[in-house]
Length: 229
Image 1 (cartoon, rainbow, N blue to C red):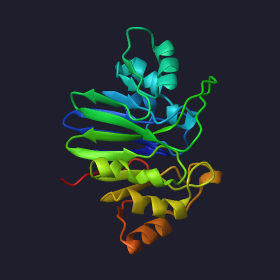
Image 2: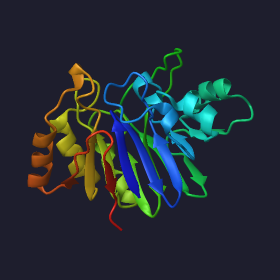
Image 3: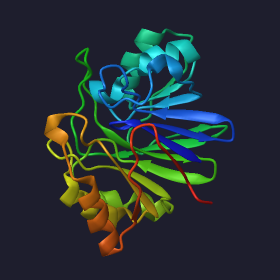
């Protein structure tokens, strides 16, 4: 699997001819590595409804026809915008949606979630299986001990971890998160996009790796990490 960082908390995952977009916040994102009309998608996965995560999901879904997965209340709001003919999946926490390319499972995240249109729902993490790899996108969350649980069900190859503080855990709590998750690789996200979420990513990398919790791969927007088999 290739994991392309699109800026903030947005990623494109690609394997075996399938492209999965996660939290495609591009329009209005000063760190965006692509425009929304440049990206293809076979599925769009959303952690929650804040504008910096919902982003361009509806616009991309309309253009590509990609199915959308979001927690039930957010899914209902998106389905109303996309129409009856568009496939929108509406799991809740603990639910799994299966595709021919793999699957996505929703896990808890400690965060709020209100869409630009005023819709309220819970926030989630996303455990994504694609191309023989398992990626855990934490979404927006503070530190809590249940971050250890997804890895109890199946080893996490790569964890996408927010480190910016203010709206999520900061880089110090994110070191503890890396210890709990026990992924092979951690990719930091949700930092340096806006002034409130500035973080020293190299200090985070040093702290995690010196503690022996994981390898930390720092991606600049637009860069790609290939998951080792």
